Length: 348
Image 1 (cartoon, one colour):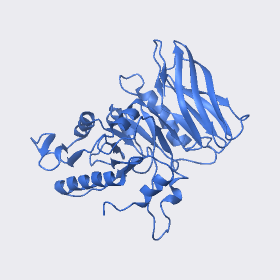
Image 2 (cartoon, helix red, strand yellow):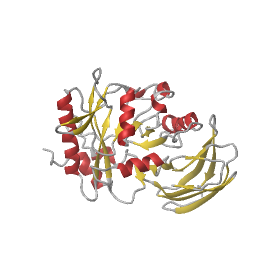
Image 3 (cartoon, rainbow, N blue to C red):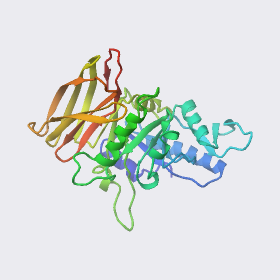
Image 4 (cartoon, rainbow, N blue to C red):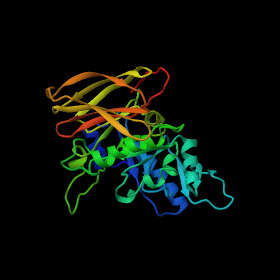
């Protein structure tokens, strides 16, 4: 059974995806059965992966309540149980699975993320099971350094008045959460592409590939090689650094840099697109408010490519990011860079 080729996995491979970060949600079993399920999950990921394609076995909702839904992204196969008895250590050695964590509280969960180089992401903020979050935990759980950020997906607040995909719910939150924490000694939050692939064969008669390509944004992560299931730390480390950009596929940002020192900076980006490009924007915040510079690109033809070099005055600004959007609201955006007073050059 673990060797069966899965429809959604095969569809992801067919459209050229190299890393498929599965979010499994199995719950409600005894500790031993849950550990056995984790082991099977990791084994299935190994069997579904090959030298050009990785199934990255992550987990939705670890069983610990931290406000809304959360995705746990793993740097390696990690074992845990839900519940921790009085006097029971956080970590014990299991005769079959080795190191096992016993999670009895949010503090236990975040300690496991720090020890094992894991990150947490909120997949659908301010909607569904995360309505009211991360706002409700922005001073507690969401403020943890291993809570990497929130998810970006199409079906969240999209309407005909928006010039950017998920403009209201996703991108508004993106800039807010950057201002929440920019003055704290912690990494900036990121906005990560997420999507859902459902094998809706049956009553609806819809195979998973029906919506996988059209409605699934992707993360282009900067890596020098494709990792294995047993060591996905290069992915985790790149995402912690913000070495990735999010795209709908029609717009790509192959390189990005903030160059210069003091107030005199230059934003440099290599952008390519399919449909006519509508505009490129530089977005920044000062810890309280957000503003932007929009560069119209309606004079550029479809199927184009250009290096943009945009003068940028960093006075009073604490973070900056760049995005590009086409006439059909498709687009791409990079992760933010924290601006320092000292001379610096940062790139993506």
